[in-house]
Each structure stands twice: as C-alpha cells, then as structure tokens.
Image 1 (cartoon, rainbow, N blue to C red):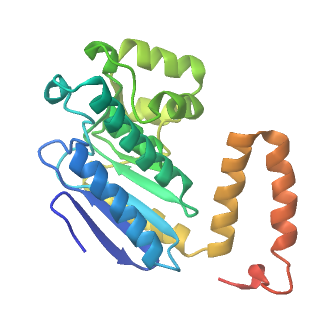
Image 2 (cartoon, rainbow, N blue to C red):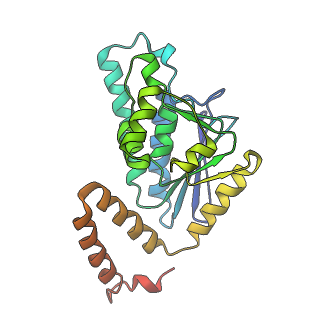
Length: 246
C-alpha cells in the first residue's frame, strides 16, 4: 500500500512506515493525515504486528514544519493543525507494540517531536537535532515540550528549547535523546536488525512491557508497580497461558 507522501511495507511482523515528502520531509497537513491513516490501517490489519518502524526517504528524517508557509494561518487554523499533529503522535505513543524511529540528516522541530513519540530512536551519524521554534516566535508543537523533558530531563530540555541550538548525533546519544548512533550508510540495515530482534520476542510480553512502562510514566510509580503484579499473574491465566505463546 502506498500514498504520494507515505508508504508502508509489512514483513516479518514488522511494518515500516516511510515518509516521502521531498526535499526535507516537512510534516504538512497531507503528511500528517496520511501518517495517521496508515498507522491506523496497518495496526487494524496486522493481528500479529510486533514492531512499527518509522523511516524516511532522502537525506533527512524531517525538518518539521515549514513556518514560512504558515504565516497566513488564522488562530483557528493553527489550533486545528496543532490538534491533528497532537492526535497523531498520541496515537503512535499509544500503539500497544514498540515503535522505532530511524532518523538521519535534519531531524528538527516537529520532525524531532515525531521521533520522540517513538519508544526507541536509532540515529545516523550525520543526524542533527534542534527545536528552532524560539527563533520563529512560536512554542513547540505536537507535545514536543513534554516528551523532550521526559526523555532528556527538565533542565536540559528547557536549555534546548530556550536556545534552539543544534545537537549532533554524538551529543544526542550522550544526553539520551537517541538510543544508538550508526554509520549513515547502514542506518536502514541497523534499524531493521533492531526491529527483527524485537519482533523475535513474545508479542504478549512486548505489549505488557510497553503498557507497564507507559502506565508508570503517565499514572505514577505506585500504579506502575501494582500493574506489573497484575500483568505477571495474568500471564499465567490458564485460559491464555501467555508465557507459552511466542
């Protein structure tokens, strides 16, 4: 299945969703709408889906939003656009299976926000990251301010958002913005290897792990602890025997 700006390939319990909106893969209205539909369709159609991999064509993952093209938006139009992107990233974040973002080149603004909605980020060595919104007189969008703080810590998130400065791949790895840095020419191969390694594990375990970590983050430490007890005991439910299922 493919669209003009988003395509998808499903293989080995992995669905790879690829953004293709040259030259810098801006997240415009069409891309956001088709990403949302594509992710919804693939999850609904793939009962054994274990990993979603977000990738891109060309040299850049996504430069986010073309602010020069948005200067004529009204307040209502801006609010609607922000809501569409917010819903897409919440949808990705709430998928019950792991989501990997394979980033490269310019990964900035809303493009970096999209990557932050993934569970794991693997970066090419040439990736550059930033939130340049302060230079354009607007705040971050699509929940980026909240996800960045959860990922790198409050103080560092504020510094990056206040300054809009660029972070290279090695610094991104050091501060926890990405999980791994690989040579640019091997990004696709390394991202697929990681997806295959994850997909080789139990689907029920992958779902439980993601649910438990997200519950703890969103509802608190004690709630997460109790949910873990419940999830472990449920894995031994005689009606399902989840621990026997791969």
